Length: 209
Image (cartoon, rainbow, N blue to C red; front, top):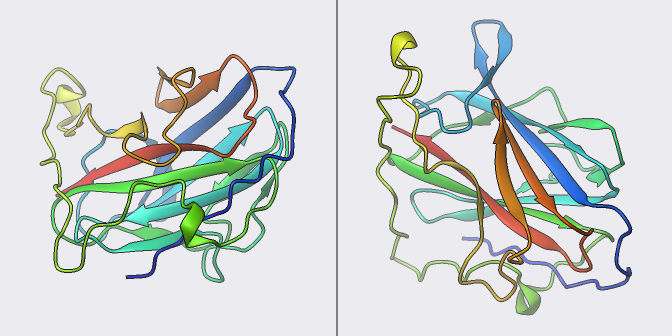
């Protein structure tokens, strides 16, 4: 397991405008990308990507903790793209290359930690903003994907309402309580009354069979 973490770079003052970040999940179907519900229970070998848009600038990092307990930096990397600078009002695709993230591993929920920082960060494990990784030989508890029969029943899709964007708990720097998570259609929107004064960290859970 490779443990990725970042130093807290508190170099900016309070922002003058509300913080807003919008994330849309897409799945590859046939030869095209299709927007899907963030709680859609995915299948093995599904290929997914994200569309991201913010109203502020910064640097984006995504760390994946799999259902088997492995933890790795997902973005930026050589495979997913190394330019992780996000500018206000622009839409970005993660991964930033022509590739995709493939769903594998035991059934459960992949936990993707999204770290948004006003400045570029260093890799320093002693300042990790995430919950501690599982101990060697121990896998984290995984939530069994559950279908909500009231959602998309007519189309036969299974949607787990516990998936999608969520606050981080149990970390050195948990998601600040003022950060709110709302759904706008199929988009997950992260908002707070003021811009971040430190790296803001939150989860995006992907449920899969």
